[in-house]
Length: 256
Image 1 (tube, rainbow, N blue to C red):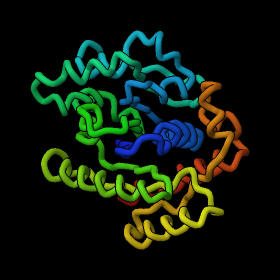
Image 2: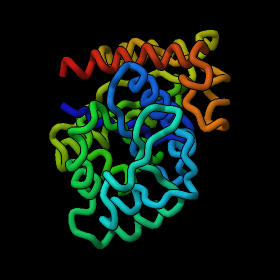
Image 3: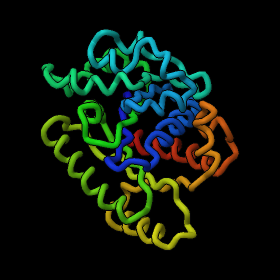
Image 4: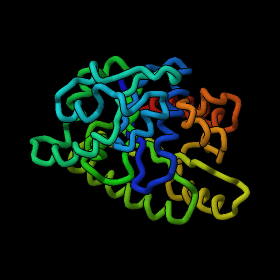
C-alpha cells in the first residue's frame, strides 16, 4: 500500500525541503518508487531535484486546478531517481483560485488517487503555513513527518502543528497521524539542543525517530548544484544520516 507522507512544520527554515529531497533520494536508492509533490510556491524542492522550475510545462498548480493530470505533469529527477510534481511562483495564485471551488481541500487527493498505486511513497513538501496548499496535503496523507530543530521556539511551533493535525484528523481525514518527529540540524555540542532533544523524547516517546540529522555543510551546499545531498556527497555525515532515516522510515511504516 502506498504511504503518503506530508513533510510539514508551521515554522519556517527548519529543513522541510532538505528533508523531503534527501529522504526521497535515499528511499529511491533503497529501491523504493517515489513521487515528490512540491506544495511550496518557492519551488525549492523542484530546483533541489535538478529541475528548472521556470521551464515547467505543468506542475502542482495545473493539477490542483484540473487543467492537467499528475501523469502528464510529473517529471523525473535526473539525479534523485524519483518522480516529481513541481512548483513555481504560479502556485501562489492557486490559493486565490481555489477559494471559490467545491471540495477545494480534496483536489490533490483526487489527483493522486489516479497514480498512487505506481509508488511506494509519495512525499509532500508543504509550505510553512496552514494554507489551502498545506490543507490539501494533510487531507490526502496517511502520516506527517515533522522535521524540527532542537530549539525553544521549535517546541512552541510543534504544539501548534499537533493541534492542527488533530483538527484535520477529527474533521477531514481520519487516517492522518503523526508518523514521527525528526531532529534536524542537530549539534550535540550545544547544551540547549541536547536538553530540547531530551524533552522531545520524554513527551513524544516512540514518535521521535531514532535517527538524528546533524548540521552538515555538504547538505547545505547540495541544492546549489541541483542535487540531493545524498547524491552530491554520499559519504558526508548528513547523507549517511538520511540513508539511515530512510531505512528507519521503511521499517516504521511497514508495521503500521
